[in-house]
Image 1: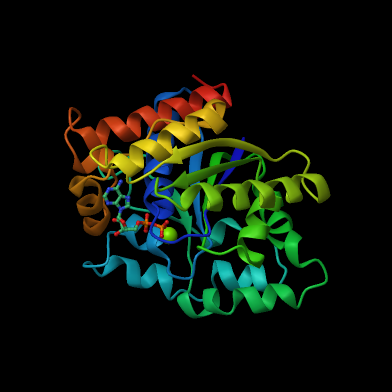
Image 2: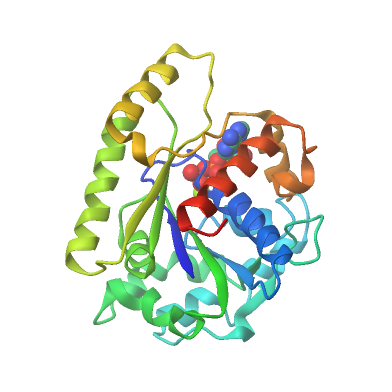
Length: 276
Ligand SMILES: Nc1ncnc2c1ncn2[C@@H]1O[C@H](COP(=O)(O)OP(=O)(O)O)[C@@H](O)[C@H]1O
Ligand SMILES: [Mg+2]
């Protein structure tokens, strides 16, 4: 089983969008396998964008129940308890398939207090690892969406993860940000989680017409070529799917660019995990 964290200190680079669509794509892949297991999507960002999209999008009402739940994921984690199936619900994605991505009942207010609650524990960075212990072999994959920070929440995610995916919006400063993230991953690997590896870097919201984007991609290829995964273009379809509370695979035609970007990404991730 892979536990994959989507990490970037910057907001708006596509972490939540990729988390959701990767989870949906992996769930579809699992559903086609005999004896396939479920995929769990964990939302560590108190903005709860991945959860809201997974529960039908911000214009619906379905997500309200999932983000105001009592008891909930954030509270259980803050109290130092372990995860239980009673906190897990079926999301609505992939919309076009029966086998749904699972997610936690959560709560926006409890999420907002989570960082402080974790810091009050004796082992603050290990709480998510302990929490997920009962789920180690229950799920095919666990995808963890993270807030745009380098604080205690992403640190918990990195300590609990086997792999990291780094979405990068290719602009002038993104290479500096990338070096920072790789340093953070390296520090977690050398101090607490030797099993952690960088699964890849995803050029995200990529606009091919922009000279600057192409230059940054060229530099990334030179410096991190072995880590580069298929890029996700900046496409109106992708944000429309997210807003509507759909995964791209259910919202966009199979021949669309959006569909192809994400199915290439899912295939590449499965290939890197050695599961094609
Ligand atoms: N590839 C893309 N093409 C078009 N819009 C995108 C793409 N990826 C993300 N977006 C939009 O950009 C905004 C930020 O994306 P999001 O995934 O929430 O980023 P993050 O989680 O890194 O803050 C959202 O409104 C989302 O719909
Ligand atoms: Mg996000």
